[in-house]
Length: 116
Image (tube, rainbow, N blue to C red; front, side, top):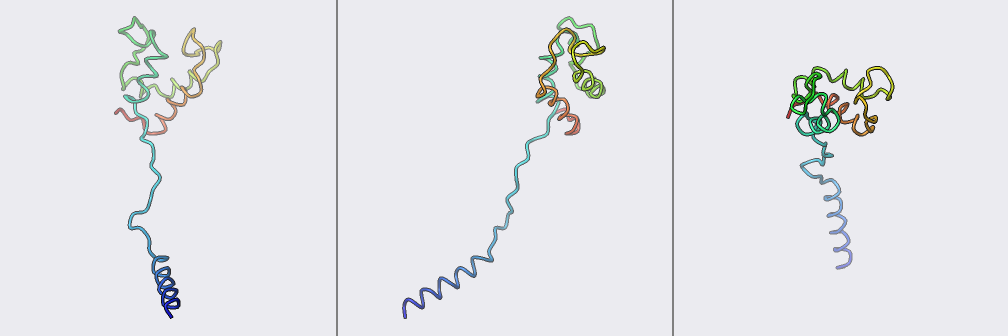
């Protein structure tokens, strides 16, 4: 008799628990969007120096500020995707940027060109 009570109790518990669900659904955490300050500024400093950084002796359009980089992002991406030797290739007289470095600029644009 005890065996039947135990089995029926387990069966009733499993039916009740089967229909239970958490009140909060688990969501995949999304990485934060790329921003000028967090991602792009360091790439600019690494690859566009000294030509586009006036404080380092640059005499081309300044890319040490958010507004200029944001306004020229399409041109920047176009030129860094070129091959060395192509007219307009950047960074001038330097090796082609790695795909991962180019991806930083593209991802920033895709994420909405945020500043901070």
